[in-house]
Length: 449
Figure 1 (cartoon, rainbow, N blue to C red):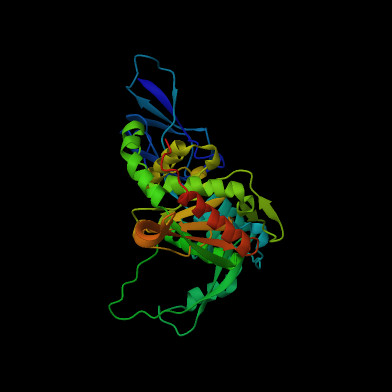
Figure 2: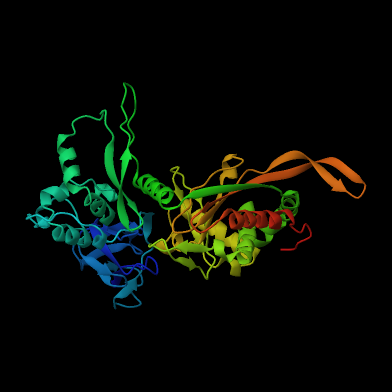
């Protein structure tokens, strides 16, 4: 019978270690192919590690709560597969099933809170806490009872780094409110910390009464993350939105002409999204100061070398995720199309890697996919601009010809660009948006692909 090493898989360039949350299999348990063996957590994803083989879990090399380096052997599986080939342990790298979560942006050094004597034996708790959370709690003098009272947004209500750092600035008041709150209906507003950049900013949320027959639905974790990020972005960046209407008749006619042949040849559907992305990358080349970020001090501009285009993708849950096409300007239209389709499909299947949702320098969102003609998108920090493309609609238009003006049916769409007015003025934002529209309007109907 052959033995196989189960290793901690690589989950992206920026992820070096993970914490074992739970072993779902005990030593001696039978395991089927792709059956989950253990659950792990990083600062970016919660993951299930499935077995690449059918067999028996012989040895668990780490305990729940242990932090394990990527690439380390975490268990041994015995299997009859390839038993006649070798009895030497082999390395089994599982494919990780992942759920995207919030990337922590707050450093514990930015938060100060009164430290008190506390029972720091966090092992007495029935809840799981990562070593990082326990370290912060110990440093801040948070007792095990107080830690247990913090509401977590992680898997199964687990307290994350972001949760404990958001709790600290308003610690005493929150503890008092948690004790005194006995009703969901109140006449006053509540003060809650929200992570903004590298600080926890206090915002006032209005009180909301709950009437008879109303249904209370708990936000899932991703919706909470989206909500916090949108509030943070509106707080950090003064948003301005510019609009332009583009005649994309040539673009529509060209796509209609080539899409069947393209799909037959490449095995890929040709949507409008790759065409929009190509136009955006060309315009960024013309106006590189739209491809920047503002540093945390708010006084320095970081001009990006790479053009990494994020594409907002709707998930079956109704939530949104933004996978990123790295170095989009270095790809031809076929390469962009394949990247768009691959990322969109894996986003819907919840199979994106952490690195594939990071590093964007500009974002495109297609509100036209929902039948909307325009939108006012919120900037995805730390970028400074986001483009929304609306639905393409047929309209009567005046067409200028050598023989005079005439009325014809044309294909039009609205483009809306939201930009950070700290560093992008109306001149830059408006001319960049107009340039994107120009590239779409002047599409070569005889172009080959």
